[in-house]
View 1 (cartoon, rainbow, N blue to C red):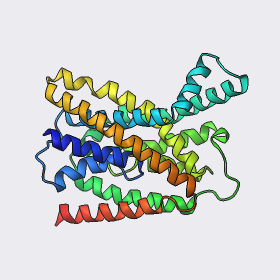
View 2: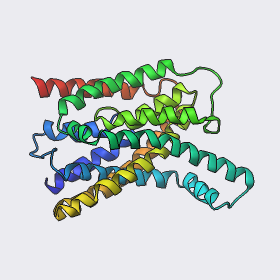
View 3: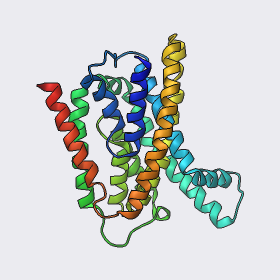
View 4: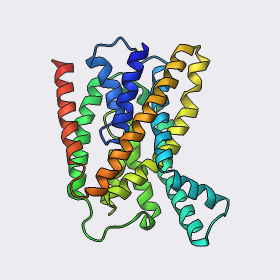
Length: 276
């Protein structure tokens, strides 16, 4: 992989990770569309992708720093009693939502790795992701919007199960979790906020699991590119998140529809190019 290729993939990661259009699908499909000679089955490719995800997760943590600061203070018992209880409850919900993806990733790691070498599969699931977004808007709970304070452990578990679908390239993590939140009665802004909060633990955990492989297998050059890509993805992701949260703040009716249309178009065109 050349440095310019790593930067292009990082820019795509930063743009598509926050939007519900599956950054993994773009990381798998784009190199094939551009006919780049990148071995996506190589030991270092998944750690490289994880490094980009760490960049975007760090951007999300920076954007929602007040939430993380409140939760950190609650663990130490600092602050007003009501705020401490509220922050501790939010932290508990995040932990519950993280568990399903961790278990599934560990159980099916080898199968999941195989998905990265199948751009056709990623394109097909990108189309399916469009239907999930489109259908989620029409099946969302109507009337009496709930807030994050109203989430139960069952709600968090269901959102966590939805997050697990993103282990397949083409299925958007943010899209699936936001749809699960909408089905539970959340507004788009709150569903997005919780989606990005629960991303940090699973992505940082994947980084601890995958990044050491770059050093263990003597891939110093790939490690340098992964660091650059993570930085580029992080900066791009912060800007993308700023735009997205303002979009959801001003749009709560069928706000996911434009992303569904994009997934259908991008997935269908990619399938046509790859199969014909």
